[in-house]
Amino acid sequence: MKYFIYIFTLILTLVSVINPSFSEGDSKKGKSMFQVHCRACHTTGEGVRHKVGPNLFGVFGAKAGKRDYSYEKHYSKALKQSQIVWNEKNLHYFLENPKGFLSGTKMPFVGFRNKKDRDHIITYLKNISR
Image (cartoon, rainbow, N blue to C red; front, side, top):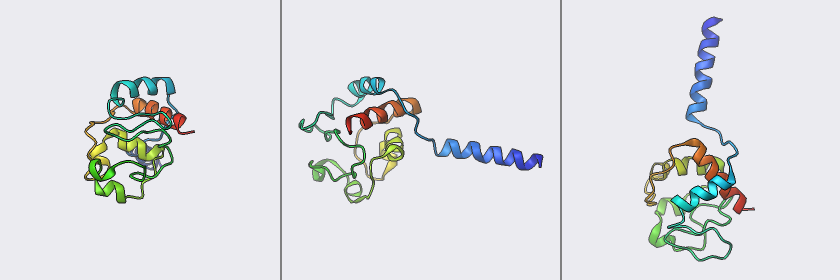
């Protein structure tokens, strides 16, 4: 029985590390982080023009690569053809390591290594998508 509890605890710990869950972040911190790390390439206002990257207004719940934007020039064929929907889980992994999320992704950003930072950004993106 002692070994069962030990193994169960170990498996539960590994699952939580491998598949981190989204925790509601601070939207104000997310907006501030967006201004520092994302604003050079992305906009977030409704109807605002795209920059090098697409406008992210309403991105939460949208299909990847399906926005009115020149994906032919800037984004990978894999992203355009994917069936990915931007939700907490997909954004979490994408923001952690954009190039590792989907082979061929071209976004030149190394990602947010800190989970809380990703939670803040995701909360901000959720709030601007409502």
